[in-house]
Length: 386
Image (tube, rainbow, N blue to C red; front, side, top):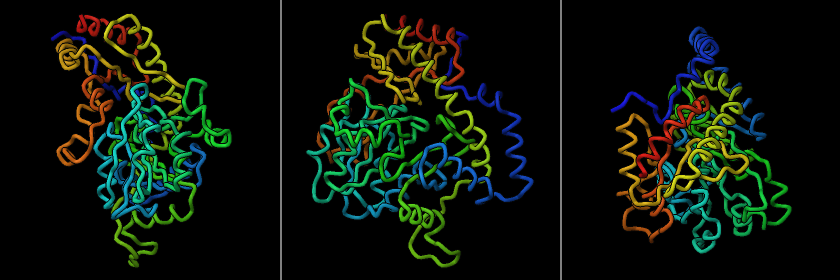
């Protein structure tokens, strides 16, 4: 193996650029000894509402809990159905199943890896209570059509924003969403992902665009009652301590994580722009390589992952060759959710999702990734394709 050593993600440059601020934030919490629901949690929640332009933000202990509590706060549970994408991390469908509802999978659009809104209506039944779009890889889903479908059928929308913190939804003339009603587009155009539906759920897992130094999550909403429900559910179902009203969870965002994330929130737009720069450079460098489809770069995409499609049937061989040459890569996701053992055999075929599961490969990306390193990645990828 060569000495190139370019990982799929390198968090060290980011830390080095803000290390003194991070140390100060951690020390502040340690010296205060307020580790659970300390002042930094409330301050971080306030800063999130200001950044996203939303009324309420409720810190929880993971992105998965943000989905679970968000669903329950909306009143979705036993006997309900929630429409979602098969092409996502298991937490998406798992959260639906864990509240007693049933995930209903709708195939994806191959151009943006997100749920195909033109296929949603066929899956709506009297049991359908919600739609859970996932803004995969940081690319906003087609929220114009999804919003109109939800309004027409009186469905709740919970946005899975685990990979899309800082992303914004924009309508373009090339988007099918441009056919939506003007009032819909005016209402949602330019809004942050997570603030378009009834609930937005975020993850602060360390590898995310806005990542902590451990687990963490956030629920956002403009609905006062949903916010009250979520706050109660995160602390064992109690509005008042020792007066538990419902079965809830121990799901609080740690104060140390909130303090760290407050530091990092100041830089998120800068870092997201760095990711877009890396993605544009990759697209240029990869343009002439056969058997590779590069991702679209719509406005608002924040590229949590830079994911290509390898169409010659040799994705796994290419990945292995990259590894031999010291280049990191990942497959997100090799097995769609509907094909996982827990659900296998229970759902009809989602052909686009299945195809992309055999083609996708995510390349190294982080905001500070230098162009010469990208050139090396592409050079090795070119050799692998040959």
